[in-house]
Length: 240
Image (cartoon, rainbow, N blue to C red):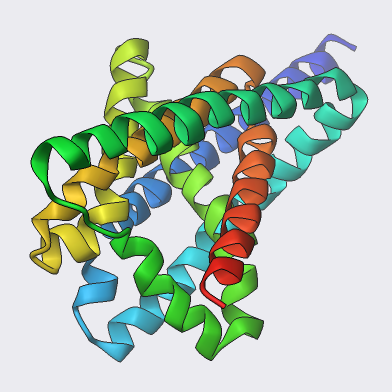
């Protein structure tokens, strides 16, 4: 009996060790993906082979994280009150991102500087969506939010918060903001795009807040999907 218990304990320890190793490898892979994604090189390199390889790595990243997200989703279903954080997130985005940033702070900055840049990230995506909506709509509205939440909330925030939680919120927001204006603002030389970084940082801070409160990627992923979908519908409608 004692021998059987010892064997069972050893098996549990071995399983725990394997899971931990798997988690470390997954985090390492996501970290590499974050560095590539943040760099903007897959977009600006112009290499079709590199672009295809990067797209494959994106799908691998989501596939690696899917079991964990599925497990988290099952827990959220068992505790439906967690979904209330989505409504809190909507309110926070409406107040801080749409009203405070888009309609008060950003217009004030533009008037003070006399510089009125459009959103380069949106301008780059719209032609691609119109040209190939069947592929691009799911990518922008669903796959993109899922990938970005894995890279920025699970990976960037998850790593940095182990050392300093307040710094994790700020650094993740900066990374998220810079990445979204990098193609036009840094690689493209349109430095006026730096003005648009604030909106992305506010959005990131809300997502990171929800992630840290709920301890699940499901809530920020769902809210990110909703935000992108409604935002894209508005852009397509206003540019029709």
